[in-house]
Image (tube, rainbow, N blue to C red):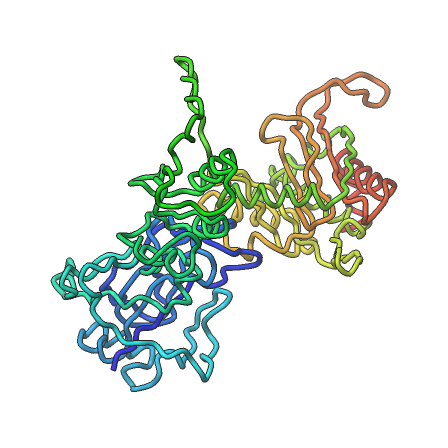
Amino acid sequence: MAQVLEFRLPDLGEGLTEAEIVRWLVEVGDVVAVDQPVVEVETAKAMVEVPCPYGGVVTARFGAEGTELPVGAPLITVAVGEAAEDDPAAGASAASSGAARGEDPAAEGSGNVLVGYGTSQAPARRRRIRPMRPTPAGTAGGAGSTGAAGPTGAAAPAANGRPRPAEPLRAPATHAAAGIAGRPESLGGAEAAGAPGRTSGAVDGPVPVISPLVRRLARENGLDLREMTGSGPDGLILRADVEYALRAAAAQGRTGGRTAEEPRAHAAPAGAPAPAAAPAGTPAVTRVPLKGVRGAVADKLSRSRTEIPDATCWVDADATELMRARAAMNAAGAPKISVLALLARICTAALARFPELNSSVDTEAREVVRYGAVHLGFAAQTDRGLVVPVVRDAHTRDAESLTAEFARLTEAARAGTLTPAELTGGTFTLNNYGVFGVDGSTPIINHPEAAMLGVGRIVPKPWVHEGELAVRQVVQLSFTFDHRVCDGGTAGGFLRYVADCVEQPAVLLRTL
């Protein structure tokens, strides 16, 4: 007998708890092979194609494009075994996963490399999974799924003429109570499974909510989502709608759940004055959700400002000799050397002299953790927002190798193809904000690191050189450090050494 296996959103990397569905790569009824990518998701760090560890026929998808799912939420269900063998292609996929040999399809490792699933053998004891059955007449299918069963419960024909399997049964009530987005029951019975202020007789159709966070917020505050009118597309209830309803309830002095007789969430409270009409020509107010890369940046910078007692020092340096040295290197005919690579080489030499700054603070253990290797992060501005790719073992690379790695990571950042591993694990950050045409800044430390060097633009300025006023190439260097790992003397020594290397590149010969 065929089995329907559920594939859930895996752990995609360090600190990632959710991902947004960008594009489905398969349709309901398609045959998938083991390790075939089935969906493209966007995390707070990168775009990732998620492969499925099962081979068989896709029977359901959970979540429409644009839906944000938590780690562990269902993505798709796949029928493996006899049902897949009815189709030659499905049989091939089932054979690849072991089903055609009569083996348990979940017993083999899939070879996946994403964190949280694959490669290892499945546990000996697994949850018993019911076989597919047609959805009862009149029951809503899974959110975002296509090819769902029709009114009679029969399987809908696929675009290629092959009948598609009917949608699976509703999942156990434990999933409904959790309010996971995109589950078949999440559009029909999640609130009925235990939300305050609801009765079984109030169920008359799906609630237009796809976000589990919105459902939880409403449930914790006793709001009945069926009594609300959403402001999103097709009446979709957004988080802003729930918050609006809570503010309206607070204005009326209510503390409990709402009843069916109470006005809808978007109705003005009784007796409240009508809002004044906005003057003609007043620009509309726009709300931009803090999610994805923008949300991750906001969270990290806020945490840095909250937890790290940072201090900043800066100095102007004459970069004329550094620019001449770079021009001489590039004139030799070898691959071009970037200014950022030269500054990175200077940073690694400075960190070798001041290792206190290549560290982080373990607040729970009350210890400063110093790192032997320098994993150098650098700020890169992309269409998706600010990201910080990491050059591994930067202290072992020369200027040519650093230039090539900076170019590779920058291109991947702009294309949105950086992996979570390429965006985590940094020990020190170099921020070249001179590309924006500014001279100085007070960088915010990239938590949990202990320091960041900021570099402004290199421009001609009047400068006293060898006792005479001259026009020189001047750059401002800003250095922000965690005052817990060192005092001002160490930070000043680091910055002064960097400035000396910029002014006299020959100083680096001591450490090469």
